[in-house]
Length: 449
Image 1: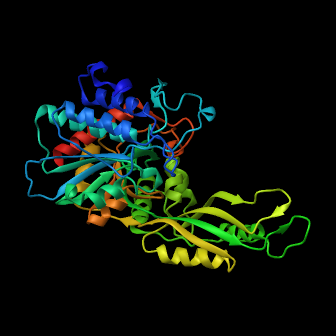
Image 2 (image 1 turned 120 degrees about the horizontal axis):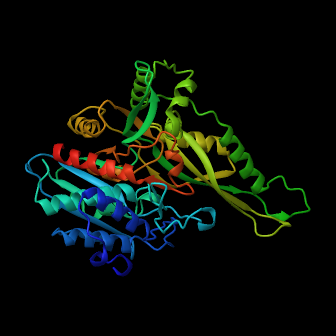
């Protein structure tokens, strides 16, 4: 374990202290995922997690999809193992960080201004740390939660999870035997809203009950190669550019799924600002740092991210390609693909590199009520509202086992923090007090789930 030897770690007295420490130590382990297998992998972080769990007497399992692409899973028994089990999971990988763009070393886990700075601080080594701290506390105390819990720490989520959760679900479905529900990232964080009844600011926590589906596409335009000085009506670059322009200009229609309607209804009730399907701007303005996530769930989206064409200035290439990141609402997968193919035109091939399902979970039920109680015990008077995530999580892979997933990484946040901007952004950071808050909330949940 070298740089992260547990024997040299300072003694801590509370799960909150441990969560802060573990978060920093996880950030210091570079698990950058470039999506092509070229990164350092998750093995070092997985071994660190194994050490934390073995130290308190647990017997976790480590599995690799490829060398270095490691995930860790452990099951703890509940007081009533006849009840359906719960999966609590997080991912160990992070997106890459360009150090030159940051004001701090992205892998130093520097603590300043009351925050921990570094790649993975919010996505999602903070949640992993909160889970590990609570699991260690349970193991030390000998206490049991109401039901069996499977704790999973996956590789490869930032590239679609095929080498992580996808591998574990396929190779070891027995590890999730009897589990029907799951909790992971990007939900449970707070936004600040003006309360129409009191005139004061109030917090609302967004519980993720849905997430969009993913279609990562590659567009291949074909044409006729030729000299750069000769007119060419079959230029692959031009054909690709025309497809890009058509797809980018397409007005994807708005669709309000149940989770979005529930959020808008709740925000309208709190703020006293009504919303209408043809005009949600005034309501979106009140969402602060969560606006980006929410705005991305009002329609299907298609965003270009990479281009590849040509090899010399005076040579017209016979092919040109572009990468397209599409996210679709539940039930819209085929409609989106058909639309992209039509807009791309006859000279552009649409290749599907990765596709995964959209999810929408019930907004009511015992687990939802447990999450609400846990939040409100730590922040009485707050509100808990449903929402849909514009991105995706490893809940997609667990859904193949019939497991219903929610996003609940509880964080009480300052009203002026651009939380959505922290995800995959420069100078990613999370307040220390938020980690402490989330650790307490998860502790409450574990006692009540």
